[in-house]
Length: 320
Ligand SMILES: NCc1[nH]cc(CCC(=O)O)c1CC(=O)O
Image (cartoon, rainbow, N blue to C red; front, side, top):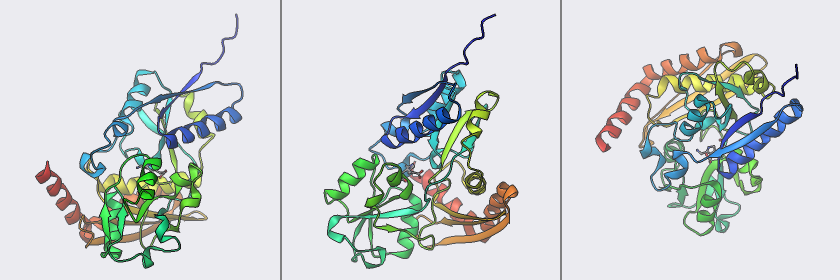
């Protein structure tokens, strides 16, 4: 009998420049780890790539950047998909799982200034400065700390957003450090925004690789790329979000620190007006990451987060 070649593994990716850089990195690492196997990249446009004229917060439900890729995996056209972990919903379709979390870049948010403000920081930007962000989480936290700024929505991929900044439509943008760094534009970061001002998004800076839950061939390949410290931190962050969100976008921020085996999670939920914020902290063994996240979420619900969530849901229903 002739030994058959192992099948080619088909990797799914969005088409954005950031997605492609991330996916090709994963493909390269897998080739290094498994030189005898072939890995092929297949790109797709997702709903989130097509709807560019509506504020993300108004589109509501998550999964916007993942659904088409998930259908591909379920039908067998793709073997796994590479996502920015923060774009991957905390509840995945039946039959799929989060197979791997890679080492995280700096998860913090970044301030990127218009050239006319070079040398300034959030503290020294003038009253009325126009800050571009399309994230409810960034908006709520920045409004809370800097009520004298104006905030304006900004959509499009990173290059589009930066072009709008450079054209003078904004005084500054707030973006993820990680995206800028991965695209080789880390030099555009004027300030790494400290966690005291802005807690980052759940999973920010890490890649999440989604695959079929029953695929015994693909899972061990993916595990070669897993970064355990990042995975523990992100499991806690995702459990926190899973308990708090009800299928709608809510301003939720987190920070995690892993010190030896002790994982510390800081989390916050903000009201849309940026006037109220509920924040707390919980620590425990890293192995219990998911329990730590869920426990902090339930604690915050008892301390006012539930009222904030109810209000956001009522607002969305009213505007719908
Ligand atoms: N929602 C868009 C998105 N998804 C992932 C990143 C950046 C990289 C990351 O967080 O992994 C960004 C851009 C941004 O928030 O500035």
